[in-house]
View 1 (cartoon, helix red, strand yellow):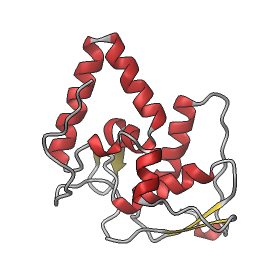
View 2: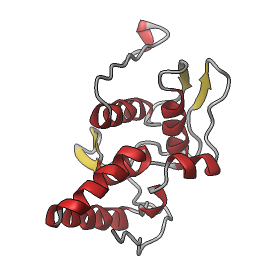
View 3: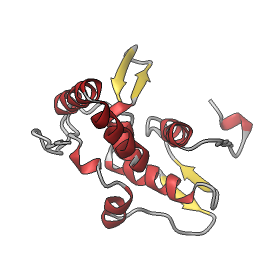
Length: 171
């Protein structure tokens, strides 16, 4: 499966996922650790660097993979395995988000802080609680749901729970 990315990894103004700021939510785990380094990301996300992060390049890459998988069963199986092994690859290639302010469905193209948060959530899943301090529009809810969706898609018999510190803070 040749997945060379013609458009590179740079983000541009057309980047569309949640999170307009440069810094992301602070994550704390019951075990005290959990931040994902680039080296750690490479180990846990072996295919992610293949995915273009600019809107146009990402959409072209998605289309290329869908066509490749639709035309060859072995390729489809390889893509499924890549998605199962790499949450960042899976969501940056196959997930979409609904943006109610624009009444639009957009590709879920993660920001670097979202990559780190998703890997931290995955690393701690089933091991310790994770507290996410975040502001609005950082994609915190999307990230929690992205982890759940990945687990449900690729791992049988999973159940999860989300909590808020105070009922009044839930929106």
